Length: 71
Image 1: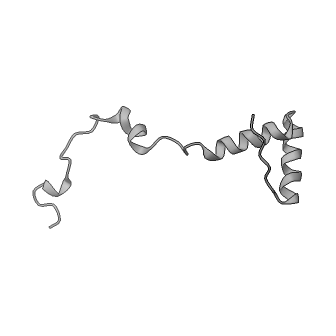
Image 2: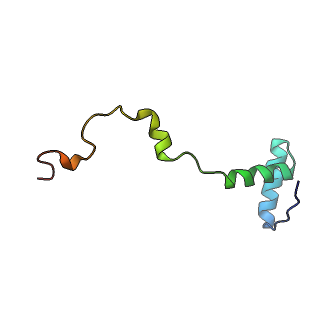
């Protein structure tokens, strides 16, 4: 593993150490997990989430094509 040195405010360091102790892990494990979570993609995009529902709804794709729309 590569060693990386970072500077954090003293209060953050204390909070990280307390959280690690509560979870029964060491500081490095907690820091690695937190960093991994930060750089991961926030989540799936809307198209991925909506994929199971494609084709379930009927009607014109563009409501402006409906007669009388906007009058």
